[in-house]
Image 1: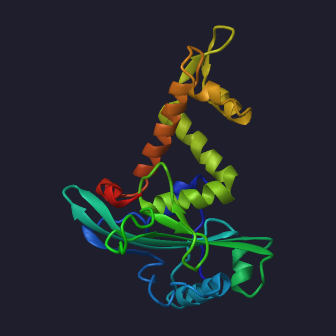
Image 2 (image 1 turned 180 degrees about the vertical axis):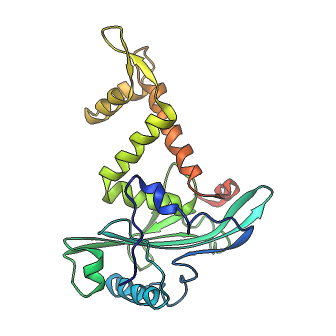
Image 3 (image 1 turned 90 degrees about the vertical axis):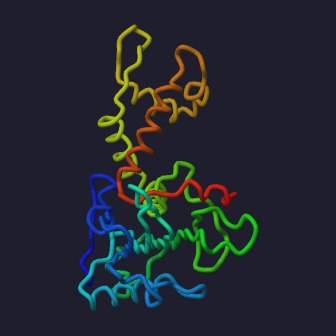
Length: 257
């Protein structure tokens, strides 16, 4: 059984070490240099068989799968070049398998999970093919070609956005803990409550979301939470951008529609 890499504080911790490159150019693979044809799932492949094959390859090389907890496994291939003082992502392929009703370790050993979801993110700006192809980057919901959909509306780097997509959908409690930590450490704004007291705005924002009170979140009245909501959103994006030395090239937006 390959040794898993876990995280608990927030999804940022999965990027420690193997996903924080410091060389000027290269290929970032996690497990290290293991993302090749042996571990890429083909269009007709079975995701469970793929996971077991990857686990066998990584165990043979004594390298870990990225397994944030007992229901998720990740594999990454990210390639970059230095441009000025920035490391720009040129290509990325990210895979994830999420299971329910079983643990990843047991699935690797042969147990059949009652439910699973395979996801893959691709970013290949040098492989366009047709006018205005799929969004860059985009996510596949199965090993076959369709469907494809944009990875995020708050873009940082493709692999970071992919991790957030998975965590926010399949471990919401963990994502919420990270988002509230970002508020405490990077935003922490106050508002005036109905009694005229200055209070932390976080509870009011969360309550407005819970009550589906869109007008409170985007309105322009003096009592609106628009400004503090925008500040929280900006703080979340800034935190994502700090997670890795690799950056996206906004010039690629010209061909992404």
